Amino acid sequence: MWNKENIALSHFIKKGMRFISILKKIIEQYDSSSIVLEEYVVGEGSYKAAKGLIRVNVKVETDKIRKVVISGDFFMYPEDGLWELEKLLVGSKADRAAVLSKIKVFYEKTKILTPGVIPEDFTEAIMRGVEGTPPSP
Image (cartoon, rainbow, N blue to C red; front, side, top):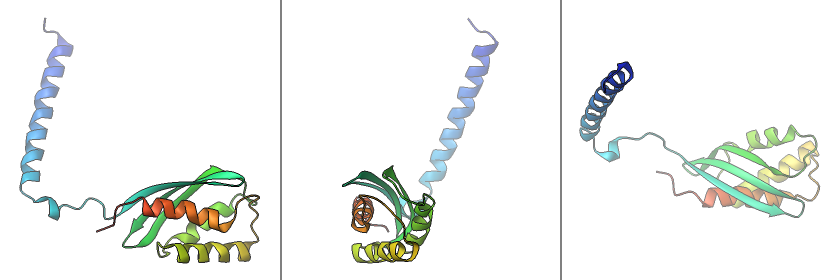
């Protein structure tokens, strides 16, 4: 039985199908190599340190860290040091030596405290995220 809701739904489906067919035609005009939505990849890494779990989401573009978000179950004093570390890592080369070097400098300059977690632990979590991503274009 047709009522207002069914008629509205029928109209919406027709409009939706029309939109999909138009979108398909637009996409067919371009080959897939010319459509670039994102030029970066996001990787996830985690590492169990002596006194906590470190989780990392890292965005890598052309072998550089473009964004990193560090979370997990560990202590850092002061807590806002975590955001400072994330900002410091942006722009770093996405290789183990460069990341470890930046983290060690961060520890020395800020006198940050992370009981049971050392710079190498953060580096391992980050590199697991970096290495878990396919190569960027």
